[in-house]
Image (cartoon, rainbow over all chains, first blue to last red; front, side, top):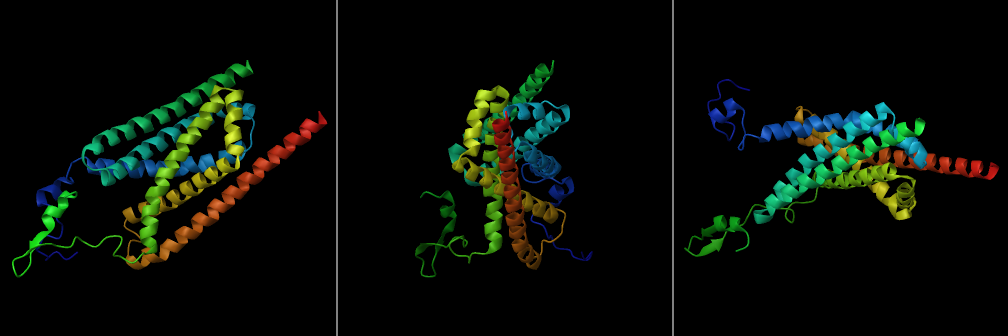
Length: 138
Length: 157
């Protein structure tokens, strides 16, 4: 960067640059949340790929036993929450880009409800597996 | 007028006649490039990966509900159509991961020159194809092995 350049190189007001804000004010937060959740999904997905080899072709009892182990239940819950959080962010961007007019707001709300509900279902499935596994042992 | 932006593209010719000025060139104008395909693929695979994750949650829910529901889920995952869907989900997740890593690299300020992007594109395709094939083959082998082991135990008892 040349310090002697006097013209404005960015299509944004100098005040806006100083504040570090985009148009809506909340865009930077969304951008970061998408990246941080994406980076968190890398180790979580790697863990799940390893687990898939343990689950491939497994019977019901084996799956229950696997899901009721505390470490597995923790990792699985973290994976489910992060996945659907990241999916919600990504789908929101897609809806913002392609759905215009009156349909925009309802579609966005539906995406939010859908991803949240499926994520919750996943979390409760893990809880049920933990309970089922521990009651089987006793 | 369907597209409200078209109102902004009305101009007058040098003879004073009102004409529709051209909008900026789009998909049907540009020559197709690998980077374009890979860019939109990241979105498409993201949506597919979400759908697959939703089905995965249903699978987990079936396991939580009990052996009967899990048997139904296993019929789906063991079915050729179900297996095709599983492979599609796997490949989508792998590509979305590769594309996502590229995005994180770009966001950190690396490999974002035109030449570098064009060089990395085929690598991303190759890595996706290789990792997806290896994982799918490995998982299928493990599943078949378990099935065979179970059949043996069933015969012995």
